[in-house]
Image (cartoon, rainbow, N blue to C red):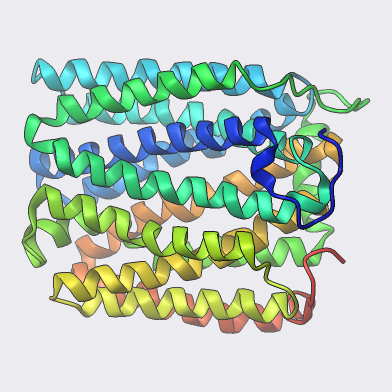
Length: 407
């Protein structure tokens, strides 16, 4: 770890943090580009809201099946090498999508298989990469580093879809090809990060050690409350899987508009992440967390009912900013309150919850839209998010009353 400065020292002066930040941008940006291309291709091929949901499901299944193993692996081996292998696997899968799209040979089943491979690689990448960060900066700078790491993610979520939308006129193959190169660039940067061998852990990768992360999270009511709140709020309130339908059939803005819709939540999240990197959250952390979740639900409802492209973008920006507050609080709690020897497994648990909220949420949105219609499904999801926030205040009073991140 770098020498410990005071908490006001700039995080950017740590060169390894800068490299880590760029790896996050490259990996997430590439992933988001293929999300735009895949969503549009699937809906164009099948015209099915359910198939859009299935794209999320085929990414979620390998994450659930593999992430706990990935966390145990990250607590026993060099996290840098694991991250590198995952980025190269995603490079190969995205390259296959590019080749298939260029030859116009992609079928629904081919897309599902390759997207599933991407999901499997990300199941191993997330706990390994996230566990590296606390050893790249001093502990006092970790909350700011996490806010900037979140900003990197949001920058990629903005830039990836926006770039994908801009170049989609050249064809889906071009979008996939650029994403493939971005995965390769992230892999090259990973080679320049220091080795990240975990502190000695006497356990082995047995079922007992695999589930140690789950037991640890369950023993920490504040951490469990924060992670599960995000799970159910985004599971119910997420509408990203249905954005191709909004872009084509409701707002009628085409693939370029889809890219902007995909990027809009990240615009709000990036702005909030930058604010949080300069002005930490301070006190009343629990109330701020629940308030941000409530705003997420309200933003979802406004988006669902909007027929104005400008209002839809504004609503997505609002829910993205609210989600950023939740992300920074949750990630900081996970990293500060977990021993290094268990960070991979606890990060894996967090990744399972994130995967469930995102990919399984996409499946839930697709099923609900197929059953009751697109707009009613998204409105119901936003209302569900508000109800979850109210219920979690009663279930996790310690989280509601939490004042500081460290404590």
